[in-house]
Length: 374
Image 1 (cartoon, rainbow, N blue to C red):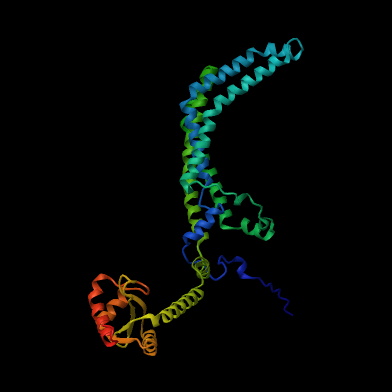
Image 2 (cartoon, rainbow, N blue to C red; image 1 turned 90 degrees about the vertical axis):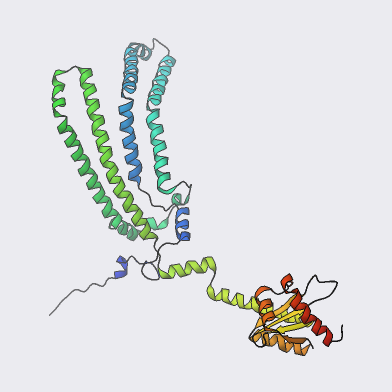
């Protein structure tokens, strides 16, 4: 008998597509803007760390003499004051003096370390600004329940980001270890001299070697940071890509549903047509193409500065205008060039331009003559 074990699984668990299909569309500016508001930007922390590390060792090299003298003075003064501190501990001197001395030493240490601290803060802000600008957001501080989901946790553990982080860590260890080995090998002759030189000379030599190793390792770290930055930019771009359905949904949200907009435009056209037909009985003449275009004009001497278009339309609407004109006894005059000019250049409820005064005046004079007004 065949006792085979069959396991069912859902391949969608491993899929990268979002709802609506595969993410093949470029991210829109709105999607990128929304992500930025949530604190989701393409950034590499390694850039900041590498820059701070490089600046730290450069400052050590530049200010080594000043820094060394300050440290020696702090140590010397503290060492010389040990007898007085012992008297204070034994109760022979007030404890306030010892407290003041400790505060002084702490302030000197803080002043000595201040340039390194300031440089670190400035570089961190500058690196972040160069990568994604400056924007204060509180969204990343909000608790997210999905972070406590064990399934999501497993996905993060076995994600491409985790694999890349592992490769990046191995690369950092390998490159930095190799750089330390190469630098120490180059300076091995100097290191062997430690047996025959004074303490101050030995400290100075080890200080120089330490700074050289640090600068070289920081330079190597810069290479890793650049690789990480390129990857983070690529990954962020891929994560921000959208499915076709997401693009459609975003367009509907920002621009409105096309069907709804079409209905709104249709409703506006109907309202406009009703207003035109309501104003049409006030017209004095309707100028036609004769079949495709109809423009109704009105002019009240003493009230209007020029003849005004009260209605216009083409095809079906032109026919309705002509039918309404016949119903209300309004004269219909065929003038193809004038009808086209009026239809193309004058909107409803606008006065005609001066260049058409003469042509319209001739039509109105003809209409008034028919009606016996002149």
